[in-house]
Length: 383
Image 1 (cartoon, rainbow, N blue to C red):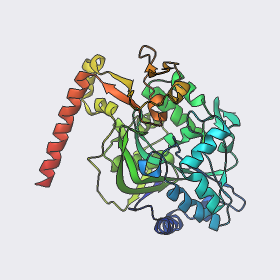
Image 2: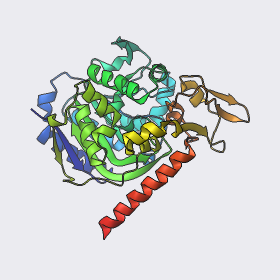
Image 3: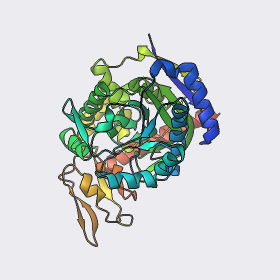
């Protein structure tokens, strides 16, 4: 039997309209009585990467979280919200994050609990937040690009179940994209959300997943019981084939996923967002593999700090798994590129968007040529 993914077209973060559309879709395609039982405790697991306003599209929108929590609350289930972003290790850190992202105010209004990640449990040698067990999880990721994984969706959002700075340690141990994808598929095998509901009403494209990305109104909301299946469906919608998606590629190697097992119901029909902007490293995936093998030594990326934006907050230094970043008073953050493993934790966690990705001259030329070809293709479509 195919695992169903339902993609809705919802254009605004209007609380009542969003609540009504989601409630109708859940009752039609994912009847709550089939997924939940009396006495179940509901955990809403959003993507709360960093302190950011909802308009920046870095985090799951609080109105989105609120609408889904209301549905379960009205069905008689106790509802809590939790996440464990990188760099936030104390209850106070996380409480400030809940405050700054609008989650705390929303939770108080609706009577949702707020959970904190300071206690952990170990499963398959991975330290997870205590709330990863004992709840029926509703996974609420944001549709965003990701410098290393190309896209971050339902499966990657499970990384927020790992306790505290252990995330940085795993980046240190698994710096390559394909190796890191194995950690995500391992999490997929350990943690099974009851439902995954993706917030793509306003998505983040370009240099994601943090403040260097560009918000884009897309009107996408996707619902599914399987995280990999929902990731595959959205990847198709934004024009990313499974061969260029490192997570889907790894899941197929491990026989965790097959496109034949996915049934997609989409209000977008056959539409594809062919102009969706992927992050700079994705340029390599758009070239013929034979050419990549020849030119790989010349394709270079490195993180750089925009001194004008740097506030010396030292979050980047705290989360860097290699200890490659130092903060010198008056000189801002400094990255030792000889130690850097290109995990881009610094870019993910920089609250001021001061970390950028610098490309070699050759890669910039390739990017310009590819974009030129892409623009000509779009012009032909308009004729």
